[in-house]
Image 1: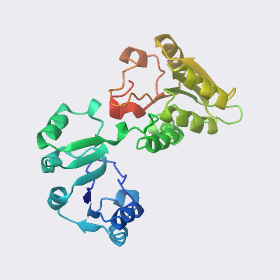
Image 2: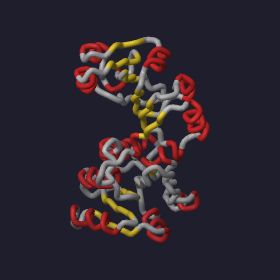
Image 3: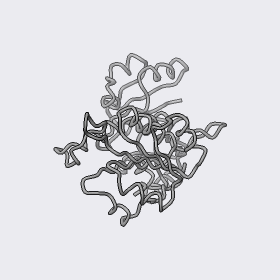
Length: 276
């Protein structure tokens, strides 16, 4: 089997589909791995590290696409490269087809390849093993992102996420208690913010209430509670996922108007259409 690792052409995409150590595991099992030059650079992996693990570094993307039985990438392929896919080939990536361009779906069908979305792979318990670690990271990055864009020089409210003596902390509202939401709650509580969580699943809400007694305010998510929390939020985090489906727009344009000026929206659900 020949496995290809193309370089992502998406702006600000720095992740790599496989690190060199995983490539080493594949080559020891007898697979041939082709790496497009620079494919791992954004994640800090040099071409030489992949070569040392047994990959062959190629400069011609046509060769990589033509010869590979399986293509692995993090983000969806660039539209300019869709014509390089061929019948019988397997493409594995974060495709996000539910909210993507229908023309991409049509192109994949026309090429006759098998496209597998990492975000929809489920194990026997219904978990999403490929998406989960990325969701954990995304949730835990919320305090870093929020703290940066709450700064006045980034157009923010000019407040500290965790407050200071005689200065109250920021009010962070998290919509969704899945993997992203739970990790966002954990990270924001650890940063000293006041945190509110909304979800429609009472069991998930109860788990958060039990894990963070007296530290997190919880609500059943509906229009009335959303309106209530938007009225005092400094930061609102969209963390809703319906696997394989477009994220419902829970917060309408009119409801966004309830937020005060310079408050911050972090919509982690945007790849699936977004909560806003």
